[in-house]
Image 1 (cartoon, one colour):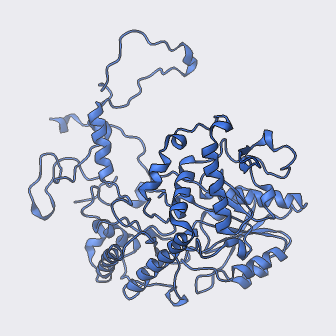
Image 2 (image 1 turned 135 degrees about the horizontal axis):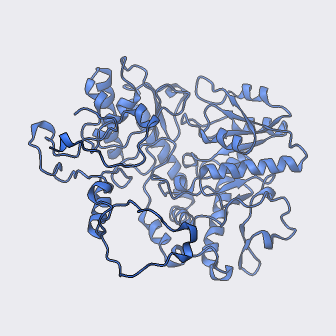
Image 3 (image 1 turned 30 degrees about the vertical axis):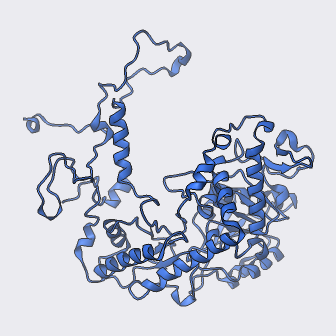
Length: 525
């Protein structure tokens, strides 16, 4: 099969693998060949009946449509079948191990979903009177208490919608604190090479300039280089712990002490909190602000773009600058929602509001359900099992794949490998594409940038040894094929519904709008 520009296989019937005869439909048993929705229906038909008569557009004014909408018309069964067939071609945590590094794609217990779908939570409206949503506010407040306890911090902002949003919350708190001190001239944020990529983007978005801090050969922050750069212009250090090399930053307390002595603050990226929850409290390490990805550590896999939630815990020094609104339990047991109109003079230093409403209720409910069902000892075991599984993957594959930081000791929640040792012409992407043929979603590729051809694997704590052994065997097999120069890897995947894209062309000339192919008169004849 040759690869066309878009990477799509033709939708006409073809012969199956192994010389089997072509099918009329193009289907291979239950591997269904699904056309684009524009190819199933057309804009000249409709799948529903409308009552006759003129439809008034007076209320639309100049927004009334003046041209056909151009969408295909399908019946309800055709529409349901189309999206159901597409869903069967997608990968999900309910199908198998999802090894994305730094993403913590772990099983989401169905109990969490049951709780999140209770009418009192699922149907809550953000503009309801506070007295009618006491149960929902109680969930938010109790979750906040748990997050503060688990991190050893002083306060928490629950409204940030995701990790990067939580980062921005923390940086805005730092900015407000500096301005309160009359030190708004501090405009530099130091970001280690081993930090998450959103960290420098967040600092820049908030108006700071970003400077890199190098990593040591063992994959941790160069503490001496960081200390040497501290000065009166430095506002904060943004550090990820455990970092993106899968290693614990064991000098974080010393780093925090040095940063505080220089008058700056410490922001910790909490995306990898799954590796240390119940084991380490970031507040004890001198952290001033840290976002927590509820959709990672507390069980709602965030593949597909959502849902997400990124509460930001704050130290005693930064808590007064946190955003509104927040919940507060009153003396009579009533849960109040403290907003601009109810804050009064009690919260003069808040930097304001980050979002229209308070947060993602479904995420709060799932996270609290997860925490309560595990308990303190269970959460500790989550971290221990996640680290155990990652080290099992690391030590099982270090004889086949280069593991650049294996000499540094045990990893934390994720194992990192490189493409060193592959023959010329073979790279990480070939291994990743071949894993699709093995029935696995590929691991994170080419990140972190400090490792050439990086392959970052996070098995999480919810995978059994049998599942890990199957993944390890598949990755070992593919790596051995690459080292042997197996040319078939260059055209993998072979068994997926679609062939490999022309990566460069797809990035530079993406096809975002479907247009019907033009058929010449000669071809039609």
